[in-house]
Amino acid sequence: MFFPSPFFCRRLLRNGILLTACLAIGACTTTEVRTTAFTPLTVEDATIPEGRLLDVGIVQFDPGLDTAEADEDELVFPELRQAESRYIAVTLAESLQSSQGWGAVRVIPSERTNIDVTVTGRIVQSDGETLTVDVTVTDSRGQRWFTKQYSEKASHYAYDRKHPTEGDAFQGIYNRIANDMLVYRQKLSDRQIVELRTISEMRFARSFSPDAFEHYLVQSKDGIYQLTALPAENDPMLARVRRIRERDYLFVDTLQGYYGTFVKSMETPYQEWRAMSYEEVKQMRELKRKARNHTILGAAAIVGGIAAAGAGAGSARAAGQVGIAGGGYLIKSGFDRRSEAKMHIEALQELGDSMEAEVEPRIVELEDRTVTLSGTVENQYRQWREILKELYEAETGAMENSI
Image 1: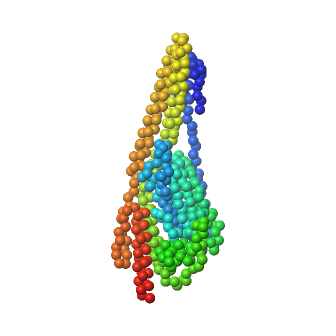
Image 2: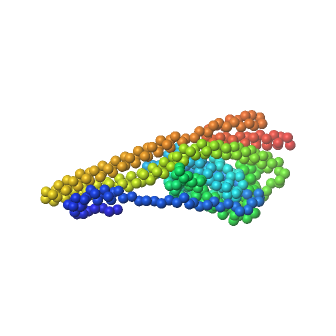
């Protein structure tokens, strides 16, 4: 950044070009070039045997509100971030399914014990121009595959209505996550994959009946699970757990319909918001740059004007008065631009506030009763797991009494 000295300002004033020079410096702009290219998705080139397929659970992303700075530049709106936490998880699930390298890929409201591979993430930045997320992938053993930050800037053409591009504006991020996961899975041996699937089942069983299934698993000091034994295939307790697990899968599958409908309903307004936010972010950055430059140059002009006015000569004093007036104008211009940037932020706030989602109550028919689940999707799933535990305990008790 160039800071004019008082001597330099006096010389400009004497030549009658101070205001022109200051305005010219303040009007300089930068041009950013974006491309539409992004990382392609890696697709399995051969049919994977069913025994090598691992199920994936993608926990709806942490919106990152607890660590978000209260900064105008960040454009963090709680309601919008909550919606994005589901949108990002669903879009990532679609990419994983398209890679044809996995079993069932489901979006889940919280971490669970019966998933072979779990993906968790946090939104670090999302403003239409830039998306940054932290992602962690862990398997049922408790082994972390990787923790990585992914970031991408959207192309201007991603929001061009006349020439729309295919896929999400940040599709490259989802493809890169899917590709990294596929690379890791391809390194696993058949034995390791069978072990992962079995540990998933045993951890689920132990969550329902600790006494019956505790001795099949051991956990090391660093949190890694290992199998110590296996129940017999005809074990009635195992059969019961497997039936409960299938019910759990069916319920989670119904949640996929909710997530899909939610994303579809928010897609149009969300894309509109991102397109507007993309432009707002660029405009605010440029406005604040100009405001800063105008304020700095205005102050420099006043300093130079005061110095010239104090020179004593009539022409210098007149030029100094012009410099002071011009500097005041530039400072006022800088404050006006900051006010304009504030208006853009408020407009985005209104858009963000209008995107809060509601979840309808869900009715579940059981053999002996009808249950209504209400609240958020997270609360509904929590209620469902409690019901499953009640069913397991009731039926297991009935089975023991009949022996």
